[in-house]
Amino acid sequence: GSGGDSDGVVVSEDAGREDMFLDAADDLGDGRDSPATFTEAHGSMDGEYDHRTRFPGLDNEMQNDYMVDELERLRGMLDKTINDKESLARECKDEMEMAAKGIANLRGQMRDLISRQLAQQNDSQSAHHFHGD
Image (cartoon, rainbow, N blue to C red; front, side, top):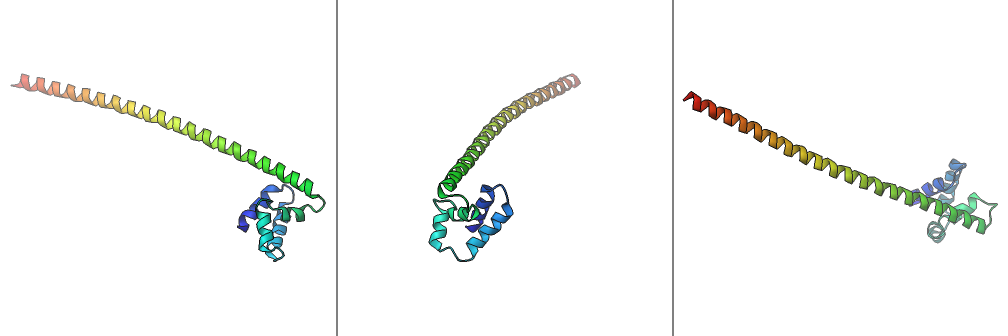
């Protein structure tokens, strides 16, 4: 929706963000855009209409180069974020598996200790009963 468009405007421009945001909202809200123009701008051209109003001194080729560079930069950031997420997920999975093995090992040790303790108690009680009789 237009909320995503406004976010895109803020992200794609570093200087004067507030002015850009207000300009974009005015352009989108004053009815000058037909729905088709908005769809074109929002679709494959990725906000070219807004871009033209923000950079009136740049010709189309410079605007396109800027947008391509910006898309590549954002794609790089996205790829890095995805790779970082996958790496963290693998690390967490490995740590969880190691923790589960450690817990299983401790459970086994506790079970053995409890069994030995019960066996010793039974032995001492049995010996007591035999001597007591």
